[in-house]
Length: 263
Ligand SMILES: NC(=O)c1ccc[n+]([C@@H]2O[C@H](COP(=O)([O-])OP(=O)(O)OC[C@H]3O[C@@H](n4cnc5c(N)ncnc54)[C@H](OP(=O)(O)O)[C@@H]3O)[C@@H](O)[C@H]2O)c1
Image 1 (cartoon, rainbow, N blue to C red):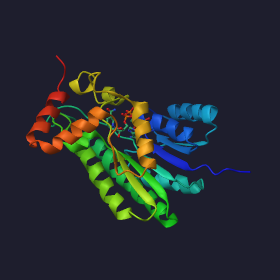
Image 2 (cartoon, rainbow, N blue to C red):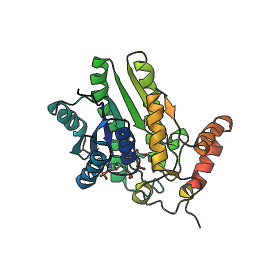
Image 3 (cartoon, helix red, strand yellow):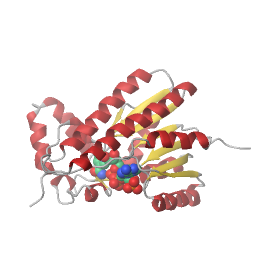
Image 4 (cartoon, rainbow, N blue to C red):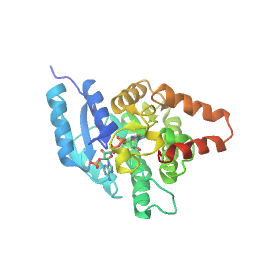
């Protein structure tokens, strides 16, 4: 007797939250399509998942900064005869510093990856899901989505886009069998802060930082329940809720304080 294993495609699976999501999906019987640039990391992950959970993984090393990459990825999926039951748009980067001093090229790449690639890939895969009448999409945003973020202005704005886009799409697709969930982690221990050169900022102090595994579990279970928004962790949930009841300038001041370097 053969058992059907659903397939989840995860972008940014080579480290951090994406890699933990791959483990959680594998534990729940999913096969995986793993996407990122670092092929050796994806191979290692695929081999771990195979030995621990007998998971079949397809590895697609692709640079998602490239505007053609969503079409390229979609073509690979079709050529390999794969059906994507779950799309996880997780790949993302941050840039840190005063907007007038940060590197424009990095911010253009950030917007390409965090916004444009996410939107393009969702368009291609959501259409396939809609024609089958089933599918789930998990977009990874951030608690950064809920207020402007001085010293990370472009990153915070990119995540506000992801929440707005995901919630609107969820409403459009309601009743079609295709659901859209947006995951909004707060600071999480991954490679992100080092790559964004923000190891020393207050936001990443130990008390606020969550474990990537806990974030991935919250995302998976929220997705399976069909939630529109998932904010992992009680501190993150509380901070987001409080902002709704105070004048707009206060969360911006708090964000600026948290984004500054520790003395
Ligand atoms: N860590 C946090 O505090 C935090 C908080 C809230 C939200 N988030 C969000 O969570 C998501 C995952 O980040 P993370 O914290 O897990 O960081 P991470 O460990 O740096 O992982 C980022 C992933 O994105 C991939 N990626 C980056 N640029 C890429 C490109 N051009 N093409 C293909 N893949 C690319 C990386 O793979 P390669 O380098 O191998 O390509 C890596 O797998 C991001 O959307 C981030 O904004 C993070």
